[in-house]
Length: 230
Image (cartoon, rainbow, N blue to C red):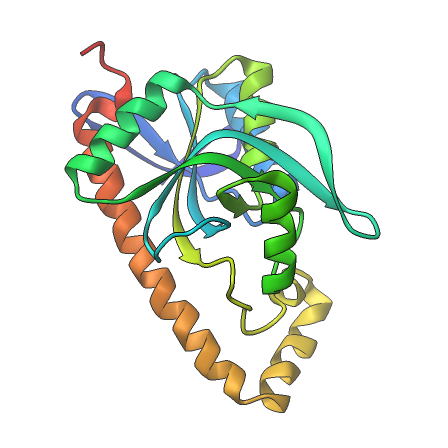
């Protein structure tokens, strides 16, 4: 464990290439704050937004989402697109696809949209898919891409699918992002015990997504994270 710019990182070296894994926290604000602190202290050759995503297009749990570009949305009496769009590095995307294919991982190629909250309802997911034509949904990629663009750092999105567009999540996970929301979140499980079964399903899906993400990055690391000239 190390610290860069005051942010905790898991650091290592693979094939002579140093890397740093940062747990930014959930949502755009913690992600942007961590990215700003680290990039002010270091000048990375590549920034990758990684973790889980919801598939907004046809996909299977554990498929890889490789973003072509990313845009954020806000909720103001309905979902609205923000104007800024950040483009992911084409060369790095091609190298990531090659690594994933070699590891036997299926990948989706397309736009990613970032929401400021967890989108729990299938209806809202479908609305976002229709409005943005994105293939993946997360919370942090747009914020990270904005920092990378300002620092002129190549940017890549590599996330695995943990939930699907037609799935409702078991509980409003936004409750657990606020200290005062935990009691309400627990009460929802008490009032609806069947939601525990849904939560176990999501847990299993998350395990699959995590295993596939590990496989992808093992293959990508073997290709020097796309940074070699070959």
